[in-house]
Image 1 (cartoon, rainbow over the protein chains, first blue to last red):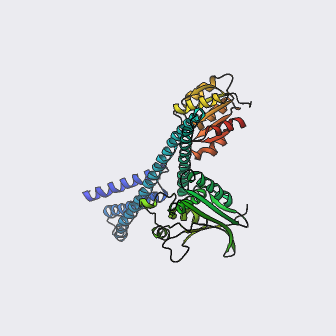
Image 2: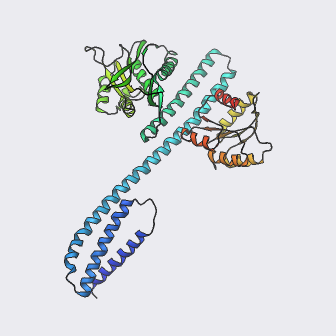
Image 3: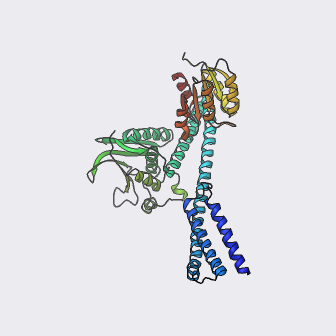
Length: 327
Length: 120
């Protein structure tokens, strides 16, 4: 028996053992296609070794041609197995990393929730005994900020759910959403020097549409954009809600405008290009247009940015549309 | 006065424990005991006689989380009334399914907590 024969027998035995081991029910973490690719590789290797043994032991040249084919198939199967395994490993690493990120986000949200709870409750407790008006006002500010922090945590959680595709959709009343957000904006800004007035016109046939928990954040972010890009101290936002017909379907159209707001074209471009803006100038205005567009699109809605006059160098009208829904 | 008079608190954060005691006491409730982790909460609850009218139960606690504690408390006393307090919105439904009387999301205003207790 020569050395080549011994090696061939060894390859055959090792491959057979590997094959048997693979056949034993294993951890469910091994994906089916990786398992199948490995089996094919081992089968090819076994067959190749077997043809060599038969040829060597019985001097049967009939196995020559089969052996040649198998010699080609072994590296092919090897690369298929390697490729599939690498892909699966990357996918699993990505999933692991996603899980870790979610865990950290969850941890952050939880601990922040506790911290805000202590701040909020301590402020409330202090308010019970505060007699000084200035002190009471300052405590109110702390309470407001803690509640804002709480809303931020909720928004982040909703965004995580949205990205994971687990954010529930519900039938909502657009007028209720807009009124709630207007109240929040007035409470937030009219405490300061800025005075914001809302003019509302409502000619909706039905206010119901399918939305999600981020709709309030979207409306608030859009209001904030129209407020922050208006540099005057007295700001007026027009809110118009109408029912329109798009391709024979009833839609709710909400138009938010502030004729003195000048939203830069970089922002409009980002919306058209579907790119997130990372410059600090555009980051302090709530949810970015690109994200807003993604959320609205996921609800089969649309968003447009328009400028009021051709002379104006910037945008000051925001139009959003949602499909009308039964209550 | 509503039905709830005695309250047992299971919360690991010491600041929040103090706040609960102060606010609940000021609102006329009697805090019978406090536990700082899940196992302590169960041990104390098992020994309590009579059982408190209400348990204020935090979710994320050392040794055993709120959901596990709630399940075991309901096995000890199927009439156990518990307000499940959590900063994790995703477990709200599960807590209700297990048998939480009410679920409150952190952070909340103390007035909200009192309103929920009054309703029970």
